[in-house]
Amino acid sequence: MKILDGKALSSKIRAQIKDEIDDLKKSNITPGLAVILVGDNPASKTYVGMKEKACEETGVYSIVHKMPNSISQEKILETIKMINENDNIDGVLVQLPLPKQIDTEKILESLNPDKDVDGFHPFNVGRLVAGLDSFVPCTPLGVMRLLEEYHINVQGLDVCIVGASNIVGKPMMNLMLNAGATVDICHIFTKNLKDHTSKADIVVVGVGKAGLITEDMVKEGAIVIDIGINRLENGKLVGDVDYDATAPKCSYITPVPGGVGPMTIAMLLRNTLKAAKKRKGSSIES
Ligand code: GUN
Image 1 (cartoon, helix red, strand yellow):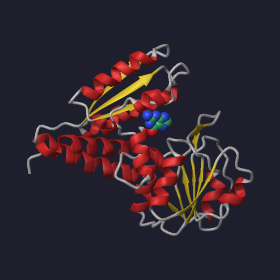
Image 2 (cartoon, rainbow, N blue to C red):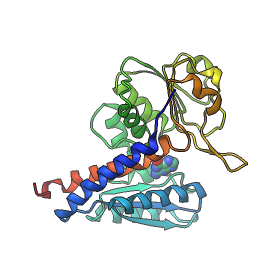
Image 3 (cartoon, protein in one colour):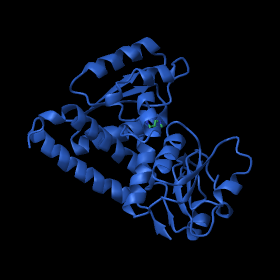
Image 4 (cartoon, rainbow, N blue to C red):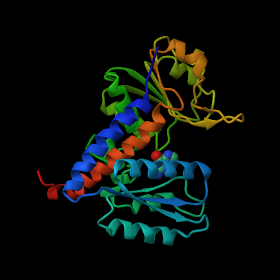
């Protein structure tokens, strides 16, 4: 059994990104990222804090627009309009979830697709489905990059994805399909989850339910990618897979923490750099 070490790979990618940004700065280009954080969801605050820190370490200029839980939709839309028009900002993301009174789809549709570094705008979703170049959601993109690092070619493999969210499961499905995998996607209405997971060469799970995937649900030699992050009552962070019992059966497995999580942030930096190069590339001196 081998560990898919997302922590080590993300450090390597972040160092490469820092070097590239150092070079861009010689041409007076500094990639900029704007983040909108609404309310005081503790997980969202933690994620945004991690994103800010990663920007600082790699030389991305970042600004966080913090808004109260009671904010109106119009105020958020106004802020996005300002960000869309700000030439110093290459990437924008709205941390989800948003409060109940806000129409998330309207908010995401108001983002400039060329600055949509989370890949949540329907324009980028559609391009991903069609197999065209697009901004791809950071977590599933990080999974593909992690597999590539370990020379795991998914073409022709049976992949079972557990969780069908817009952020993780659906883009994961499209990336795997575009890479030639045979994809089976499971969700809350799936009748017998084990029937699906136990046939797969690769099981990808991102539901947010500790202990959902047990040892008997994966086949011998499977590759297991755990995107879940759950905090147990004793404070321990775990994924959706019963790691200790399942790991010995796997050819590869991601740990939690230190697997997919760090890759998400690395891919956000990668997407921000891509947006900056796309927007300002013509002014880069060679
Ligand atoms: N909420 C949970 N994951 C994400 C993510 O990757 N991006 C944003 N914007 N919100 C999230």
